[in-house]
Image 1 (tube, one colour):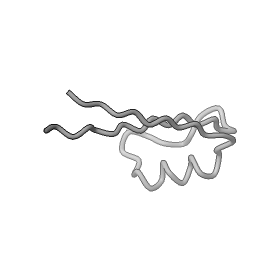
Image 2 (cartoon, one colour):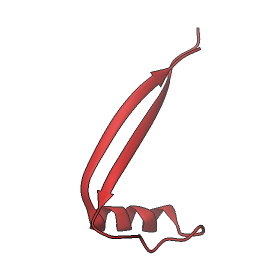
Image 3 (spheres, one colour):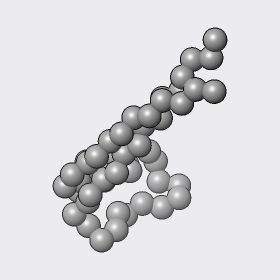
Length: 50
């Protein structure tokens, strides 16, 4: 029996025209910037099974 996979999609509305992140920016720094500038957040979780 194949168990379903969970996929979580999140969209952030931020109070900035761009975030100061680059390709090599750490995940922790991206999270900090998102937390600091987030106005709203929407999430949806989907299950997928073959």
